[in-house]
Length: 552
Image (tube, rainbow, N blue to C red; front, side):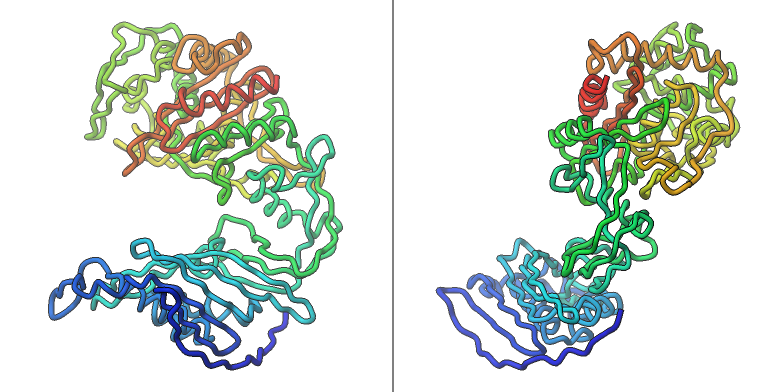
């Protein structure tokens, strides 16, 4: 993609007073800033930050400082003075690179910034610009914001730099580029042959980006010209198109998504903030639905969260394999248990006196699992997750980017915490739906969104299956939990060919735990999480159960 030098018109203007507001229009280099500030913003000089050591200002930034710092930044930016604008931030090097590329790589001209009323130290602003590349041009409008902070070394008010200041879809390390896309667009189809769009299924925006990245060139389309976000090397997200200047010709990619289940999944997650869900077909691994209530990041496929007690499915399979537990065998469930210097508790410190392992699993007794840590090698849980459930090897190839779970080798207290889905264990709904699928089918089938025959890729496999005895007991544990345990309310009326497990994962700094739920019914399996929602049976449970009922 070539770079073109832009010759800009210079303009001179002067301040004007508009109905008690101060309007400042600053011209130059083809950019313009039209800044509106509340007339009262400058009236707080008396509340200036107190002087700290050697005259260094401390305390919150004042309204005057916010106005001055943000105006300095935006004015320099609109003049095309990237280095000067970058010096008004707390990360000049990173800011300079991205601001320089705003004109040279993104080909944006005639930019106008219109700040809104500051909310504390945060200043929102609207951007209007023209994207011009060769003989093509198109208007662009979007909103962003900046936050003014005080530099620790000298108290200087500066813009807190993040790439999202330039555009809200940018992550640190990303860039904005306009030109021939290089990757043709794709027309994604559901399993019935109907087109999938982000307008129809809002959760699938990131999935469609991933499909284009993976299959755009292979699907037979031709590239167009567009403004897009190019992700940094460390990013887990796919590149994102922001504006098309000329449309390419899309190729066609068929997915395994069910239109009925996808629509229902979208509706279900919309009822809760920060909810995600995945539905699979255990006999094949086909992904039938994926949805997130937040559309900026695909938590369902790429999230990395502690799965809480849903991890006890894997842990139970390990204990059953080793003869450390049996469905109807008496198993300890004390109120607390100390291991590795940590004291572990059950929810509300309940205990089950003389109870079976089945009772402990169904009620999700933490200490029933923690008490077995001393009998396990540090790598036992890791091997079980990898060898039986196909997790934690970073080798899934579903058709779009995923996080394939992580069960690291740990020792002492962290090893014990891992047994109940805390410690270093990390999963997402795709991973946990796969766990339920493995129990249902008896064999790990790597989930996939696009059939491997499309690009002749090799799907991941597990090196062994559970013994018939262990598998039978594991299914009984999950069935009993769905029938009479913590999952019973959500799974009511869905039996008898079913199984489930609930989970709650504590997160530092979060008042309520993340609620998890994974289950299967017939040839369907699903898992969901509601972040900061509370107990899984009450939050993610109804979402999963609704989809299992609909799809059967």
